[in-house]
Image (cartoon, rainbow, N blue to C red; front, side, top):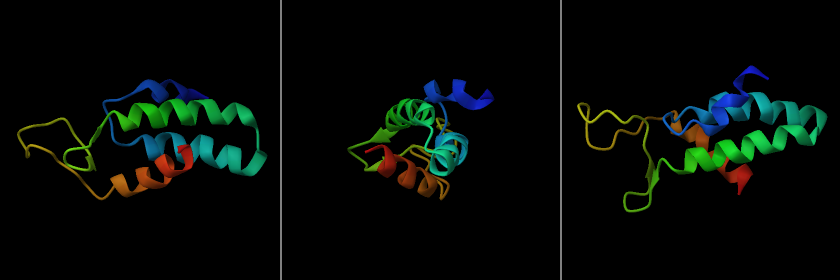
Length: 85
């Protein structure tokens, strides 16, 4: 699948959309276990954006907006990370 390379991308907060919507639905519908590894790897990549001291997943790395930008899109990531856990 074309988006599989994104599983190693730790520069975006959109991994819930990119991986959980594609591989997650593929797995939910087919139970094909080949969909699991890209999601688990992607969840680990996404988890690197979590800052325990703040308790949030950083949306962007841009410092010009604010020190730690977080947008509502990160709510999609919670379901993805919960599944991976």
